[in-house]
Picture 1: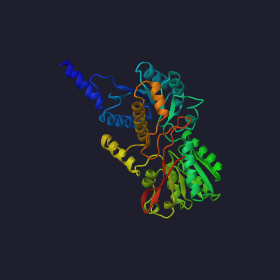
Picture 2: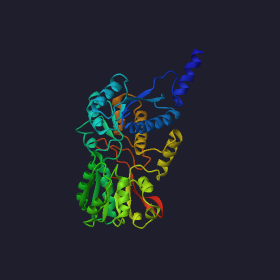
Picture 3: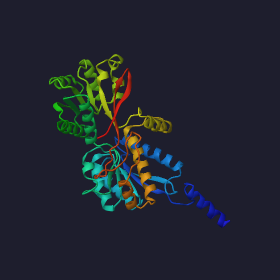
Picture 4: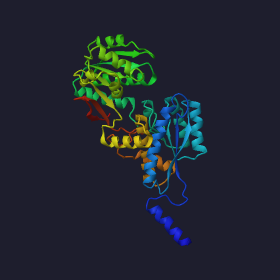
Length: 377
C-alpha cells in the first residue's frame, strides 16, 4: 500500500496535478482593501483570483497550487511598508504584486529590492517606476502595464500617421491626470506636434464651457483628453460646443456612450474621435477574459482587474520556467519573459524591467466602437 500511494503521488506530479501534501507556492499582494478606494483594490484582487483559479485548474505551478496572500495597504505608505514586510518576513512569499496606490508603490520598491524579492508593479502607471527598475536601479522591480510615456508615445505615433500637427491638451487637477498631460506635452514636442494649449479642470468644476473655448481658440487639429473624474462634464460641454475639433487621447468611450446624445454619438464630428486604450474587449482574447470575469463576479472587469490578471499569469509563467519558487530564480525568469499579452505583443522586459505590450486606437465608426489600429510605444 505504501508503494502504491508513493507511485500515485509521483504520477500526480508528472501529470501536472498538485502533489499530495505539497505546500502551495505563495505570491504576496498588497493593495487597497480598506478606505474610500477599496473598490479599486477589490478589482485588482478579483483579477488575481481569476488568474489563480485558471492556473490551478490547469495543474498549478511546479506541481503545486499557486496561492495569494493579501495585505491591505490602505493607500498609505507606512501601512504599505508594514504590509510588504509582513508578506515577506512572515508569509515568506516568493513574489510581491501591487501596490496600486502610487505613494505605496514608491515606498515598497526599496523594501522588496533589499529583500531580493521580485516586486511586480501591475497597475501604477508612473514613468518613475520604469526608470527606477532594472539596470542601475532596483533589479528586483518589474513593471508590466503601460506607463504614461508608453501611452503618450503610442498616441503621438498614431496622430503623426494621421497628419496631425497640433494638439490642445485637457487634464483634471489630480496627480495621475497631470502626469499624463505632462507626458503628452513632452512627447508631442519630440514628435514635431505642437501642443498649442493646455487646460486643467479644477476638482468639482461643472461649467466646462470656458475650458472648451480656450482649447479651441488656437485652432488645434485635435483636442487631446487625459481626464478622469470630469470626463462626463467635459463631454457634455464638448457636444454643446458642436464638437468641431476632433478628440484624441484617453477618451472614456463608456462614459461617452452614457453621456452624449445618440445623435451626436453617430455624428460625423464624433466619428473623427480616436482614443488610446490599454484594455478593450474589442480584442478577441481580451473579450474571453472579460466574459470569464463577468461569469465569475457578475460585473464587467476594470482595466485594473485585467492588468492584475495578466501580471499573475506572467508570474506563474516565470515560476514554471524557473523550475523553482526561489525568489532569485523567479527574478531571472521574469527578466527573460516572452509571454504573449492578450492585448497583443509580449511581456518582454527592457533594460528597466518594463514590458511594452500592445495598446489599441479605438473610435466610433458606423455607430460601433471599433479598433482602428494596434500600437506600441
